[in-house]
Length: 360
Ligand code: ADE
Ligand code: ZN
Image: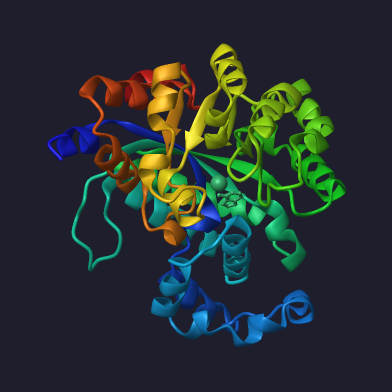
């Protein structure tokens, strides 16, 4: 596309990427070997619940895993593999290596030594992680936070990218587990110190309405903690308005199903909420057949702000740059529309006004 150079050069912000979703099959196998974790990994829980785990041929090689990832049928089908990947991550240095590889890729477009340089220019990123996916294996949030910030400091020196960390509470677990997790993060002082930049909510969406988490989110609001939540990915448009109304979020992650209801769109516009849209993720998890079904034009025309993001780039076949390019190929947007998208992404960031000014 003639706009390729513009898309590359635009200073970008990413707000929707899961740290564990940047774990490539290659790094998964490498860390499994280093940490002596059997592949397919069998936890005591998995061996009880999912006998099929032990014989899943997808774990024969990185190539076999990539092939399986290309055939996800739903959010929960993906989440099964995503949570298995967690089991190879043990030490602060594992999380540091994972974070640094992602930040390098986001800032420069470079991945491994074998791949051709490709620009990307993400200047600031806000990264999710799932504390409840690690604590049952004996890995406390402090291990992840330490590794993340060590990598972030190095990447800022090396590439000029800034990064913040946001814990997501997991909806497939009991609300009481989310409450305990949030309380322990507050008690450890991670929000007050700035080690954590806000609160998120993710995992299985269907039958887990946002209202279940309203007490936790109102505690966060009272403490001045910024809030975001996954909604309207698989769940109905009403979940998007419930996230805004009942959780008081400043952003909604995905939110694409909001386009099905004009009233929900109006609510987003009036609240000035930013949707963190992930086009390649929506295709990979079968929310849409193709990128051109993502309601990008509807959002632009109705004045609903959004950013473009990668979600779980190691699983869905693209980082931020590939998501921008896929949207351009599907919609052929104007230079002005692209500038609006990139500016809304900077302005919807949680990095502080001074940093925003530098990026813009
Ligand atoms: N966790 C990681 N990626 C996710 C997604 N796309 N939706 C919900 N939970 C997730
Ligand atoms: Zn997500």
